Length: 121
View 1 (cartoon, rainbow, N blue to C red):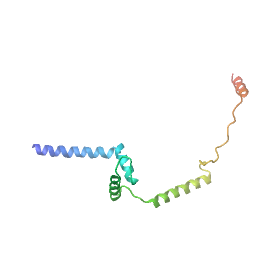
View 2 (view 1 turned 30 degrees about the vertical axis):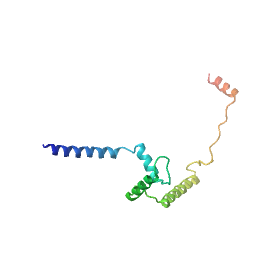
View 3 (view 1 turned 135 degrees about the vertical axis):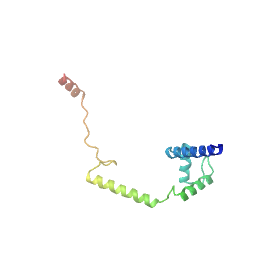
View 4 (view 1 turned 30 degrees about the horizontal axis):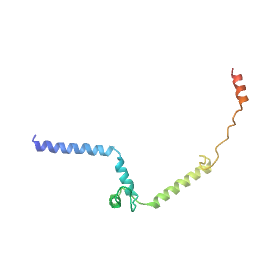
């Protein structure tokens, strides 16, 4: 095997290994930070110039990684609220917003606790 062919095989194999590793690993801290401020563009940032976020936003939008479809999100949330309200009306789940918490347990007085201990002995 010639050195050029061995080098080509090494490059291809290492490239495939890197692609497999990149597909299984999640975002790092810096990558996640860049993604978040590209998804929420603003005029200014504390530690980065705004043009960086704008360019990243354009790239993410063109690649289809970020879709800004607020109507779909609000419709989805409205549907979830409607389903939750229907379940609450049926009594399937308790209301979390100040709803019924069930009967309160009465605390035993000191005398009651002592009498119960004597009965158990």
